[in-house]
Image (cartoon, rainbow, N blue to C red):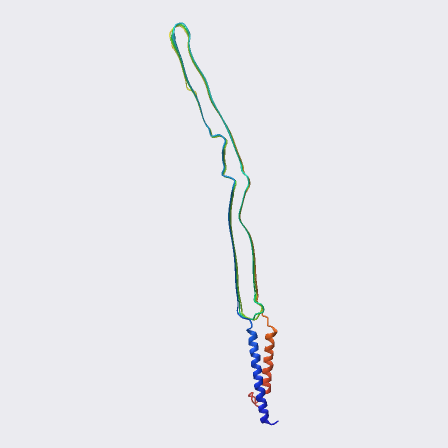
Length: 351
């Protein structure tokens, strides 16, 4: 083959190799951009709010709150002339008897503000795409609970009565002559007031918030493209628990007792007879009381939370056979292209 024909053959061969190299480059670029833009936006929001109020307390028990009045107003007068006796007599018994009992027994008070179980699973799978992967995953768990349990704040009063016992007596014996003159007052004024108060409270248990939050976020973006992964997981747990079984007031006896016996005895007259004026009074108060308070347990828990967050971003670069083969083909064709050209065309000269 002459040189002219050799040049034509080389020209045709070089052109063919250039066409094949362009095709391989196009295949390679197409394989490298096979994955389109993948945009994943996942939002999960769980909000749990609870308010609980449990009450068996705040009770008022009064056994006796009466008002008792016992009054005895007496007046005796003996007058006359002559030898006969002159006698004026008062005899009074005045009394109050007041009893009372108060019993308060409360049951248990249980209060739960919020009980929540939140399970969130977010998964973004872009396959084997080699393009741009933008995954935005947000998970928010908000648990708020307020619980108030009360079995206390009770008031028990056994006896709060007001008792008055009064005995007012006046005896007068007057006259002339030889007879006796006698004026006598006898009085018994008394108050008896008793009371019992008993308060028994149950248990008070309050739990503001009990939450279990499980969040799993997974981004699976196998490929050689650009991977932008934004994973946010926020857990907010707030609880307020108030438990009370105290603040109780028990009074066995708060009574007010008054016992009075004012007396006036007068014996006057002339003659040889005796003149006698007698006062006999008994004034007494008897007031007893007992109070007992027995409270149950008070347990308050503001917050019980269990948070488990798992975030996985898998963006391993994987080159598939579809992208590797065009690259090898391109390298072979470029080698043949430069190998088939003469050294003179490649700028290589022999010295």
